[in-house]
Structure formats: C-alpha cells, structure tokens
Length: 190
Image 1 (cartoon, one colour):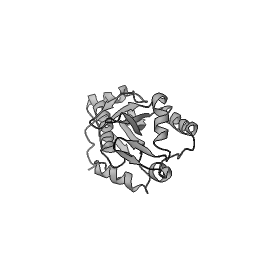
Image 2 (cartoon, one colour; image 1 turned 180 degrees about the vertical axis):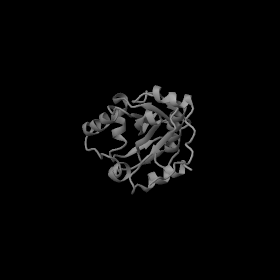
Image 3 (cartoon, helix red, strand yellow; image 1 turned 120 degrees about the vertical axis):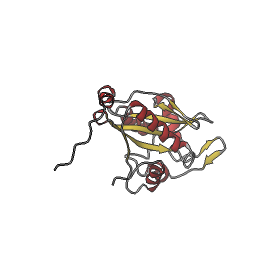
Image 4 (tube, one colour; image 1 turned 90 degrees about the vertical axis):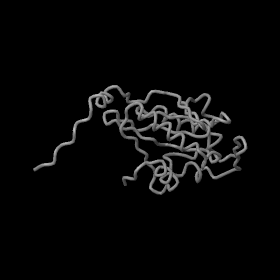
C-alpha cells in the first residue's frame, strides 16, 4: 500500500505565496543592541567601507588596530576585499539591485555607527523560502551580541511575514559562520 500523502498546507499559508513580494519590502528592525536599516548609499556606504577595509576602527570602548581585511571580513565572501570606495560601491550596488534580495546596514545602537551588512537573498515566495546571506561585520563588533541579534531580527521578521523556511548557507571552510549558524538553531543539511 503506498504511503499516504501529507495533509495539504492550510489555505492561509498557501495564500502567503501569492502576497509575498519577489523583492522583500524595506523595513527597519530594531533590537536591544542593533538596528537593521535598509542599505542606502547615503549615509551608509562610506562608513561601511571605512570599517571593512583593514584600517583601525574604534567603536565606543572597543577598538582594533590595522587588520587583514581579507582574513577577518572578506575571505569567504563572493567578493572583496576592496581597494577603493568605488569598488566597494559596485559590490554594494549589486546587492541593492538584486531582484530577490534586500541588504541591511547593521547599526550598533550604543554608538549609532554602521558595523556590518546582512542580506535577505534568494527569496522564493512560491516556496515560502528566503535565505540569510552575504553577512559580514567589522572586526570591532565580531564576537559580540550583534550577529545573534541581527539573525534573530531577520528570522523573526521572515516568519512574521509567513515564510516557512529560512536558509543560511556558507562556504564549507568558514568554520566561524558554520558554528554561528548551528549555535542559533540552524540545521546542517550538507
């Protein structure tokens, strides 16, 4: 006897597929430590470049000296590091122009300063699926609550909108990203 088919999804779930936009709508998400703002070239571009290009960074009482941006920020990303602001702008423009994604500038609430970028990418409303990706932070904010809260805000918003699956993909050699995803409850699928 063949296995029974699973029950169909409820109508209200299926209706979400018809109303979710292909490009996520811009929204500001605020937590206790960070605020996520839809990326804007003004005022975010120059500040994000300054905190991700290997130059010393100070944020309140935290600071890092000159660092290897390839090693600490860009190694497992699709592009970078960027030698010029103009090259960084081209990279960010590709993210803002993505037809099925939305980049957010991560703002550190205590200082009001940009500290990184997180994106909704690969949005597929027909499957009620969206992905978190192209996530990076300045070394000055790494290993703080910023990534955990950013991920929580993005997950909460996606599930509130009606998505049923949120994916996190990372380079197989990016151990920090893999550990972070597992720590936050994502399941490894191979």
